[in-house]
Length: 52
Image (cartoon, rainbow, N blue to C red; front, side, top):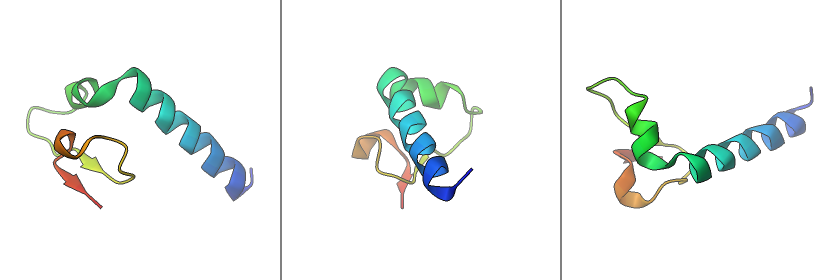
């Protein structure tokens, strides 16, 4: 699989997860003490603990 195909699949997967789950559902997947780190600025500024 080429790097371009991997990037396309990743971006589509991220979009689907963001649109269907949201920050609250993503946080629910974490342990009681966790940090939600938004690498791609996919969530609203107040929804993540840290951003790149």
